[in-house]
Length: 407
Image 1 (cartoon, rainbow, N blue to C red):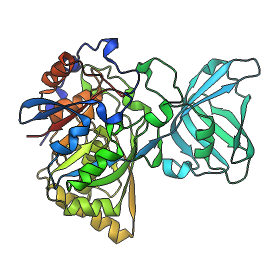
Image 2 (image 1 turned 90 degrees about the horizontal axis):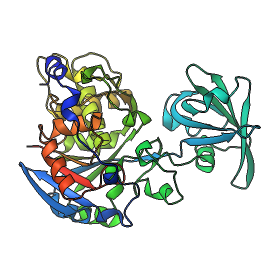
Image 3 (image 1 turned 30 degrees about the horizontal axis):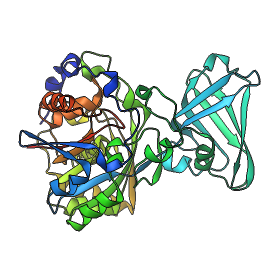
Image 4 (image 1 turned 180 degrees about the horizontal axis):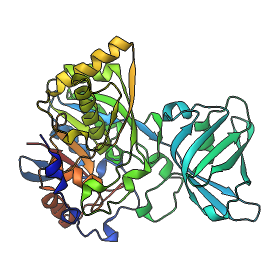
């Protein structure tokens, strides 16, 4: 198993590479599934197009997707002076910290936010904007209730209007900062997977952006199974690592929601599991560690701290036993779904317990995601990235894709 000593020796400088600006995909391809797809399997690299994915995935394999839906989390208000205040929603605070619950509130909500032009926003100043929702005129108000912690209270007029409708009507698509451009109308559908369902992410699970209904249909007809879970991707996914000793990096926390049928199917599944995206992988591996906590009688809170997997365990269960422990707990408590948080930090030295394959895009240098890919490919990430660079692959969120297999 991975040890704390091993990961403390992981140095950030070993995971840097040069990414020219012209290799960052600023716009998506016209057709989602025409992106390039590099396959790394049994030490060999091959090149494909994403619509060929059904030919690369064996029958009986389970693909696990993250069905989170990106919300237009960038809200722009204008002061009476004309100055613009940008409020970027980060984390719900009240009346619930659970994203699925706060999105359906119809009175008021409080969010921790990033605030542009904060100095110009006075403490007693209420910012307002007006939109039409379902034929109703709706005035949304923003009040800075805690400057230090950047807490903003939102209230709005109108009857039975959920907060998600407010955001959809007023917000802008929160494109990653490295795109260095404003969102357009075309980004609203394209910075979203075709299977997105549960609102709450402020960044897309980008590995899923390549899937089309046609690709999904061919996978099903080839007897490839699919399961869905939810991890609401936070802005922390873009936070660069600044510490040379990577274990010192303050890992961001993200919310997960998994229903009992998915856990039951994972428990019964005996063939390979492929995570569609790093977010699905983080959720699956976190679910495994939740089962370990239950089996070890640590506690029954679905909360995985960043270095919990590197604790000194005498023995670890195989994945089906761990999932079964979660399933038994849910059935005992009468739960139909389990909600949790994870800070799991997957880096070289981590031992994977769930995922046999990973579909993912190409990530930023010196990032938590490049560390995850390095761990999964047992250090072969640089070989894969050099090959992608030589073959003119497009990088980051709107870029090309890869399917990586664990030996």
